[in-house]
Image 1 (cartoon, rainbow, N blue to C red):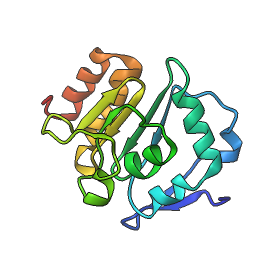
Image 2 (spheres, rainbow, N blue to C red; image 1 turned 90 degrees about the vertical axis):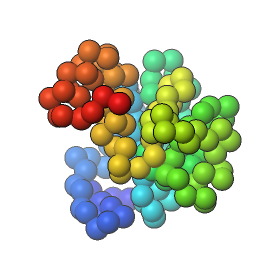
Image 3 (cartoon, helix red, strand yellow; image 1 turned 180 degrees about the horizontal axis):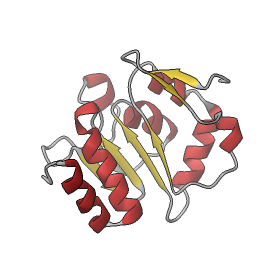
Length: 153
């Protein structure tokens, strides 16, 4: 889509810096996909994003991340979770499509190879801090945990 303003599932408006077509050939260390419905379905149906995610997932040292509905709706739909453990928003339509769904209390954020998934809004800080850990190391993540007053466990 050509719009830079995205309306989230709860009505929050976020303005993108650029259109996806502007960055289709760019190299990223990590591509993170937000959840929420119907946004996750719209992301799933974006052919350009699908191609970018599949390329990213196939590259050594590159990461794909998704939260809430997106692991099931976006990543699973395009084979990115094949053979991987993952988590998602704990609702039947999403959980039922994941091949290896992780649902224990320790599974708020699941890392399997270069794919990182998380459950939803309530786990988003842990998700974000895990992304920091993957990209910048455990020491930086721990530093941010402390500064943000986020419990470590």
